[in-house]
Amino acid sequence: MKEVRRLKSIIEFHRSRAVASPKHPLISVVDYASVQLSPESYAVNWVCDFYTISLKKNLASKLRYGQQEYDFDEGTMFFIAPGQVFGIDVPTQGQGTRSGWLLLVHPDFFWNTSLAKTIRQYDFFDYSVHEALFLSGEEEAIIDNLVENIRLEYQQHIDKFSQNIIVSQIETLLNYSQRFYQRQFITRKVTNHKILDRLENILNSYFNDDDFSGRGLPTVQYITKELNVSVSYLSGLLKELTGLSTLQHIQNKIIEKAKEQLSTTDLSVSEIAYGLGFEHSQSFSKMFKAKTNLSPMEFRASIN
Image (cartoon, rainbow, N blue to C red; front, side, top):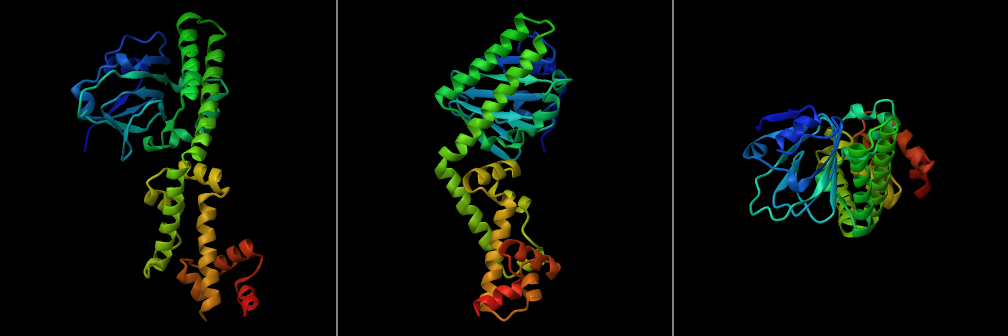
């Protein structure tokens, strides 16, 4: 297992990447072309005590985030919150002309501002890099302009208004990112529909497994692990595409299987409930009635 190296401050980050000292101790915009990655950078995993929002292009190396790898493409953003672990793989070819930026913000910068309480409400800080944000040219220009305004403000205009102005710009950047993610859920239909197909296959396989009843009901965490996506990303995707949460998809599959067994077998309600993974038949009956407005026995009677 690789050593985990912690960077507690933005100053430490600048030093670790051989970048000139930051103009402000709590916020910095770093030109990615100036970042120097030493052999040590590839030999360890990293965790930072500050937020990192970045847009990187023309990278030959891959970035590992969690258990995933991601090849950076044109106009690709990712978001890392304090305490999240990431690593960088050794490039397999020449670096080429790297470009882009990193916006580093220490949580202390948000002290006594609106973002202090609301920044973690942006779900994409819990996404993995393979769930990165792909920007169009127009979207990239909007984000680049906001980041440049932030850089100019902390470098040239430090006064009693600076913090609120910068926080406002960051909040606008995050809101645009949220909008662009919602657009991505819709426009990247091929990938998203594959996820829906895989979700359906996972649920079918789970309930068709003769041994599944002993494992209990499938959880949201089980589904996201099988799909290899984060809980928050799948929730946002499904809400946008179907209007339903991951849990609702699971419950609908349970009801579908329950109706099938109530219609085609003589199993008791208790036997069906246990076979579907419920510990108590009362819990099954309560869910069934909430979803169908009928008790299991009323449903069975209605089709006979």
